[in-house]
Image (cartoon, rainbow, N blue to C red; front, side, top):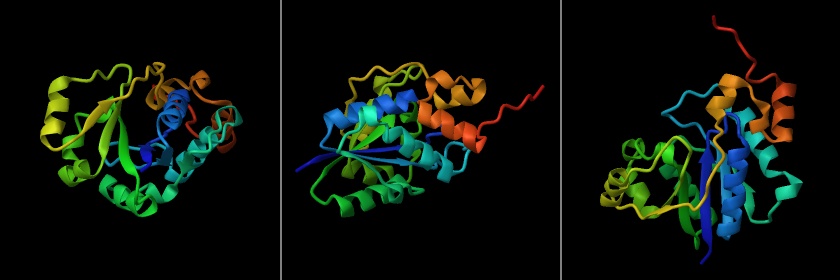
Length: 192
């Protein structure tokens, strides 16, 4: 049986932190499926087609290329449970690990049919700077049937939200930065 990490992310835009997560997952799991997603709890500034393209560029970096990474747009579904059903069809023998950032822990109990979802996957939480992991929240997930592990990963303090606010291109990989510039995404707007 192989271990498969399922990593869906808003990628609005994908940053060097996303790159580190994907790289770490590719070293820890037999296979890693990655896709850009529309989180119903977030408002997305950029259409999914652009976020998917940027995520593919991030994954295609020849310096970090690994044979066990798969970009799969079909996994981008409005409900994570549907994503898991598709993953189960594609990798029927895999042990599935759903990868989420620590910022999603508080909203996870409100996800669609969360108990059914948690019965089908192991949960891997990636600590995010500024989003501490609280044991009572993990206990609540465990009471709902979750098998929870915490990734031994220390990410840089960068985020897509911070990029959208500051336009600091140092948080992006060069291919993603070029794509943003070429497509004129995240154009700075003076709101004062």
